[in-house]
Amino acid sequence: MKKKILIIGSLNVDMVIEMKNMPVVGETVLGTKLTYIPGGKGANQACAAAKLGGDVVMLGCVGEDEFGDIQKSNLSACGVDTRYFKRSKKKGTGTASIYVDECGNNSIVVVAGANQECDITYLQEYDDVMKACDYVILQMEIPYDAISYAVKRAKELGKVVILNPAPAPDELPDGILEQLDYITPNETELMKLCKRDGETIEDFTEGAKVLLQKGVKNVLVTLGERGALLVSEEGAEIFPTRKVVSVDTTAAGDCFNGAFTVALAEDKGPREAVIFANAASSIAVTRNGAQTSIPDREEADEVLTSTGV
Image 1 (cartoon, rainbow, N blue to C red):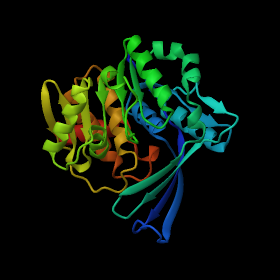
Image 2: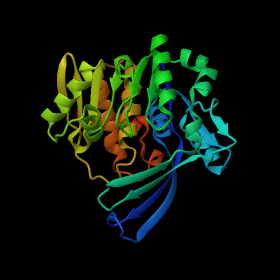
Image 3: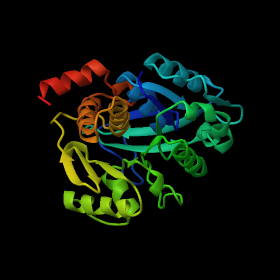
Image 4: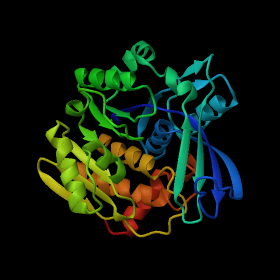
């Protein structure tokens, strides 16, 4: 039997605005295209994990609106178990305005909406869902007290806990770090969390060691076109990724996290899991959108085969 993956997190609808150059403060620019795409870090990671072959269930909240229907329908079509979603009667489905320039760089503004109701009471209602899983993934787009509760409860139940600290807070809630099996920041999020500056692999390695000293078992840093850096008490290793022409990096990190967890759930070791995650996310950056950019398992395996990994 496959090991089950539980993703607890945000569900948004992304309003993607394409443009030649990003506006600076006070500037008005003309966009070239507007697209509505299901998104949210939790939903993106659930979509990725399911499309890449995982047995995935998700806990999260949407509004009683068309955007909520779109999210539930899309994730169900990807293979995610969405039976336990909460439908808010007070708040609309979360939204994210995503600005993408011609180089594929993006800036994002999120309005949480119904994601604010992914709270402790809701999670306690579905404790049996957590009991039935093997891996728990969280991000930082739901209330922090709910994240703290979920991490603590997951460890009480003996689950493998992965936190993608995005968007990175100024401080993580107390008591979280020592309960994490993996934390998966990008380089910017890592340096914010460890309160350091730097741009080199050596800087990132030293920053990761700060988090190790605070109790995290493994720090996995996504580095964009430079690949990924895995740091643990056993040492540090950089995993280069294949070179591609980037179109849109919106869900690359989410794809990476979903793929990494799927590989772990298939009893692959951390190194093999990082290599698989690099392959999947290298496909995602060549496509527009969030969930629309995520490859299926056949595509990811084909990249692994073609690169000789």
